[in-house]
Length: 260
Image 1 (cartoon, rainbow, N blue to C red):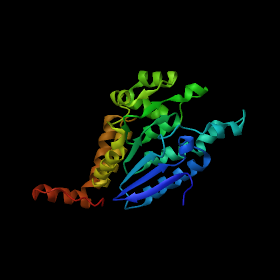
Image 2: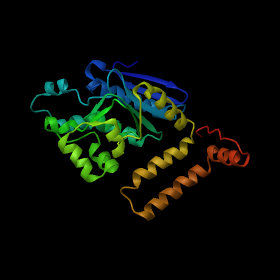
Image 3: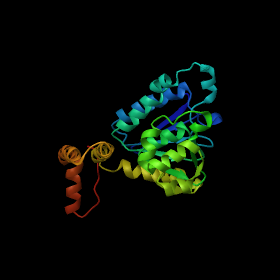
Image 4: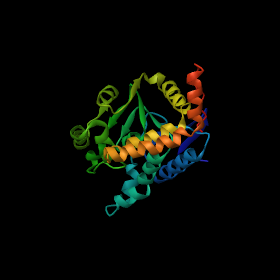
């Protein structure tokens, strides 16, 4: 049903694969449209409890397709284009009540890295390379990078990465906290599958509440967050997953969460 991405579900995990390998999975208008559709599909599917984003071919994504940008000409309104493409995709990702894992191999450059930063977790192969490459074409970081990057690595380091556009290998990205884990390239698929499977078997409602509260923590004071915690805890406390977790604790067994 898609031309520029692959979509599959298995074991409670939806995998969305950017599939323009000849262009290093650069985003054109069609891939924007289909990525948004795929995200909507994964979020609305009650059987899906975790989402994985990955790229086909030799890399995750090289960012925007510059050949498309040239077609717009010198008078292109890039801001309007962002409002119709990356921005709705990023908001769907942030507002998704399911964890999102990025599987990074090869280049994740420019807006490709921005999309990865909007995921909740990033697992990188040892051949991954990351760059805020916008400065190389005279642009500012977009697709949410200005929000996510300083929250992950801090203000000064984020500004350095943006202003220099320098390329990071997987180990340096891990040291900075840009990725959660680095694995050998041949083990990436298996590592991501296991990571996503564990998240898909967790209490889905609790994970959603955690995601909402942690995102709020950067912009709110302690009393506001205490109230947010209380609201989320009321909902989680009435869930079947909470009852199952308590029962499993007293029965000395592993819980089987249903995401309900």
